[in-house]
Length: 407
Image (cartoon, rainbow, N blue to C red; front, top):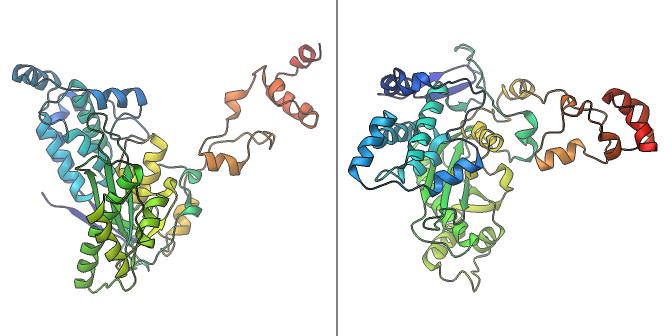
């Protein structure tokens, strides 16, 4: 089974849809064919916090008879299914990297919830089998046809385009993150690392840290050490490919303590125990191989590789990880961004004291739709303002409440 490469006028795309179709064939006639695949913005695992909490706490039985019964009941071999999604993940599907690691932790004794999570992931892969990683050209190749644009699942304001750093197409840039002590069974942390080039990810890793970190800074420092090693490896490959990285590779981190320790080369009294990792990372920074730079968590794409995210956050990071958003240097950038789905009709008569576009964007929430608040008799009590009386109450069809409030 080979990786499929598609060369288009503005981009080069790699995907593995033939592999996904092939291993899903044996499930179509049973459980996969009976599962509805109509969700507009699917995620690898259910996004319900209650389900995720139960999934993380579930522990399967070591009894072989119970495990055999689960295989017959679920109509899928757990280890085989995990192996199938891992192959897709390692080739061109970084969007399921964290999910693959979480599912593989239960290979020895899966619980029924783990089977449900595996089925949900396979369903997600089958629904998005044509998706892949996009690498964008600096200039259009007129000899090739115009390819279909990638599907962008996020709304325009969810992408936070203005907050993202901009880099040249031949400059590699890395992101690192860690989710401290999120494993409730061992209290270990997850490391997420990804490196970008030409608008798409070229290397990524989700790792279950081998030791327990005593602080979030220590967990982030372990992730920074991992991104440093990966940057050195990628720099050597790019040198052989005649794409030398002349400047230090920028590695974005969202932890102030981690970036300060690395760049200042001064450990604190609480972090001296991470001795070897500290000296290795500081030596790479001193030799100008990498440079740690602070970035906001909301646009740190490595966050996608460390935890189960809500639907909005998942697709915000996945759209960039998979290269769905063209870089600014691409000729397709302006067209693609202008075609990104905007919010539906937004209430335009909400007083500025309640919310503004700036605050809504900063808090990453949707403002209320007109259909959500039409006819609500309590709105005049909440938004009472003489300048809005005539327009607001008439539009809400609740002018009769004035008499009640006046009395």
